[in-house]
Image 1 (cartoon, rainbow, N blue to C red):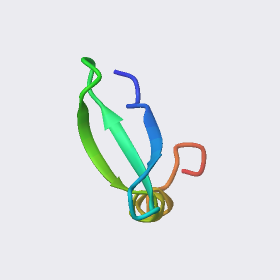
Image 2 (cartoon, rainbow, N blue to C red):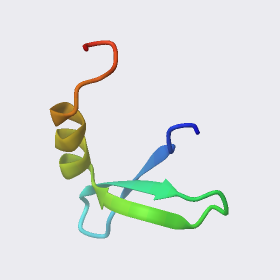
Image 3 (cartoon, rainbow, N blue to C red):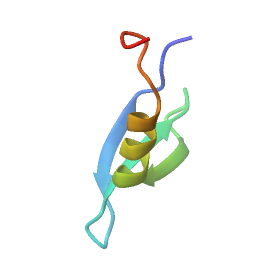
Length: 49
């Protein structure tokens, strides 16, 4: 299974958002860029392990 593709959007407040869509193109998960990015930083990538 491939990694879900995240697209970036801006909310009405101007914060950057990540949106994950399911196969039908509907939003599956939406979160702020800041939180998503820090979660990505906490996880170790495969190349690092």
